Length: 226
Image (cartoon, rainbow, N blue to C red; front, side, top):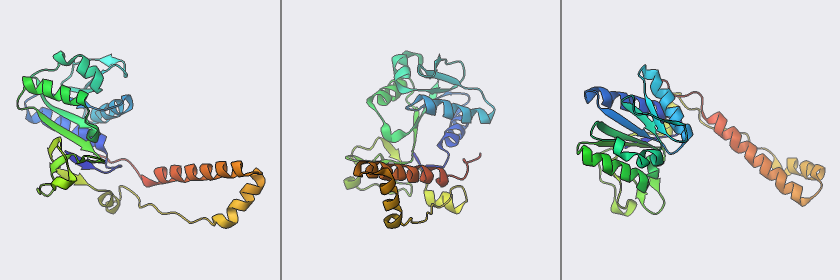
């Protein structure tokens, strides 16, 4: 699997990996799974930048096609028609792979029965899960993950890691900074205007929400370009 921090451009990475495997496998098919309609559409749009066509197999998107060798789909729709996915598939790419579900495992097992050489590639910004630990057995340096930090990891290894600091150093992300507001002086005026304690609570919630929105938007400079 590939650990890629938020802002690293997982959709672009998925596009590059799918296109590369398709080419080096002699034209084999690639299934790209994502947990939501929005991610399926986003990943397909980024793949279109390679100049190659692709298909969508997702009820939530409103399309169920296997016309092109690279297919973007949602797990449940694929599982319900799993017999249509056979030995022509060389790889399954799983976006947000920290959320490997029984449905996704069923899909992979079924295709693997048709193609024992099937490759599974996962991408996630958060490969550590509460309760089970890391989702891979070997880290990016080739060292086994301590048993106390992982339990029955689904992926054999993390082959590459893209950390947030690396993206900041390369100018892809901007390091977050903020000015500390003088709440002790600022809040009484708001509370007086609001008129009661309930409004004070509401004002605080609005301020916190505003800060979170600013954090999200100021964190990204631009998407990764291929």
